[in-house]
Image (cartoon, rainbow, N blue to C red; front, side, top):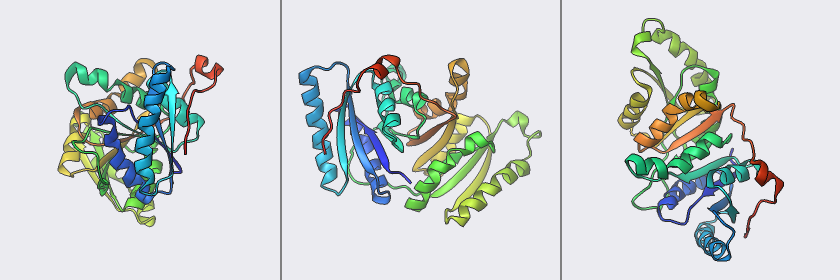
Length: 287
């Protein structure tokens, strides 16, 4: 159950595409919300502008019954967001990825990707919407699993969401075609039946599909065929080149797809910036 939700905004309409998803969560979760905007330098005019912007958004949410406070942080965007989320005991981070293409998309989407790499908490990332009003549907959630404990760690975060919204969890296991004979479908299915039975006892409906091919292409294809409202997956909490390899599927799905992503970095551990740790976190709060 989510108790505290951190929602990152950058002052633009694009970042507000996360708000309909926040409203959907608040309709099913009794959670407090903290709105966050990060500024590069602690200059008075930047702080005033950021504070006024967050208060405008917070006022609109409060008018709908939400409990909201706001914080202006100073520093590097991704690290500041994750630092506050970890220190504040938040349940989840919500944010929007920029909807660009090519190199521009890669650069502008780097904040969301950096948060995904750093955060030991679940992160919900959405792509920009043409409009950012109203609640979003949450009925079909695709959950890529490979039968391992690590991939299954996403279930502890997505199961409460499915329970609260009445969404159906669509398990999908993707196998390299070259390993088709080495990993029989019945073996894969058997390893996932236990999770299905456990979730069914909680009143959560599930389906299981096995596909053969490239993981990214198959996740995107399966999500499209199923008209997924969300893709929820776990990525491994590693570092260096190994992290880049193991996290490549998640980042490729984020860049190439249009689905909202709920990502949990299993075994992830956030290491605070020693400089930031030595000084007081710069915030402005209001309720």
